[in-house]
Length: 170
Image (cartoon, rainbow, N blue to C red; front, side, top):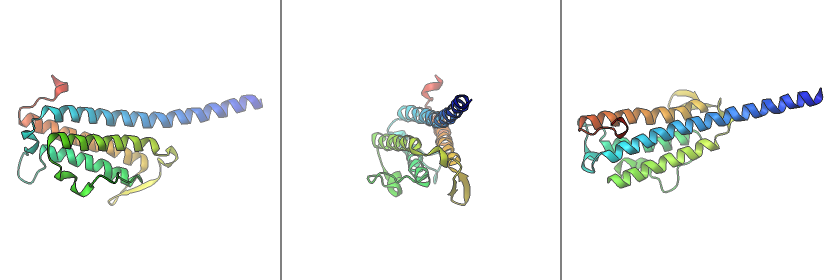
């Protein structure tokens, strides 16, 4: 009987661990998909189109991509992770040139994907203040996904406005 109870306890622990890993791997997979699609779309824009904006006072293509990168560092910061020393979060939207913008964007995604693995699943329920809105840690990680998806949609609209077809919709 003791062996049976021990077996059930071990199986229960393994099941919880597998579920926790599934949450992180699923979240990382979806964030990576957004990253891949944004990069694919960003590459479809010409260098000149990175300065295009739909109206005065609205972010350009390049600024929208950099805003997404900046938000990755900001949201990871709310999870307790400090951006790398060589990242100037306040000056990020001043980066110019398609190649530099994409490098900054990809670096932010590599950072956030690495940090998701470092979040302790026991902290998923821990409360985080997102500027007056209270979320738990898991919710904050999901906001990273939602935010990148929001700006992917923005960039799709920008692309369609200037005659660029999202590569995955051909």
